[in-house]
Length: 126
Image 1 (cartoon, helix red, strand yellow):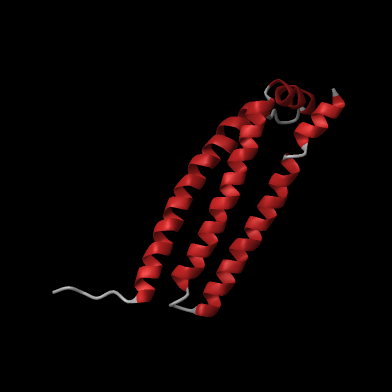
Image 2 (cartoon, rainbow, N blue to C red):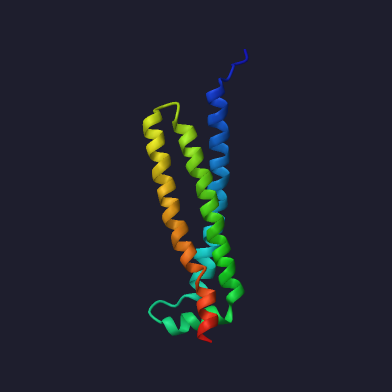
């Protein structure tokens, strides 16, 4: 016997699928940006060595910024999917959860935008 899916179930499934894929992409981007590049370039407590590392590997630093931008874009998809998945259960809480996730993404985007100024600042120092 075939079960008929409602429109909400199809939308929920698509939202869950796209959010899941976005979370996996975010995880891979975070492993690269934070786990590999950031830990390679940044030396805790020694700003001079960190500056020299970034100057020596500006392309790697730019790849870290790209990784963070990918994370921000995927986070927007997760916020949408979170809202769409929870909307049939409780629209008010779904809207709150979606907006809180968007707020988090906005704060992250502001932090990443500050990272993008560093290569320009480095070129003015040297």
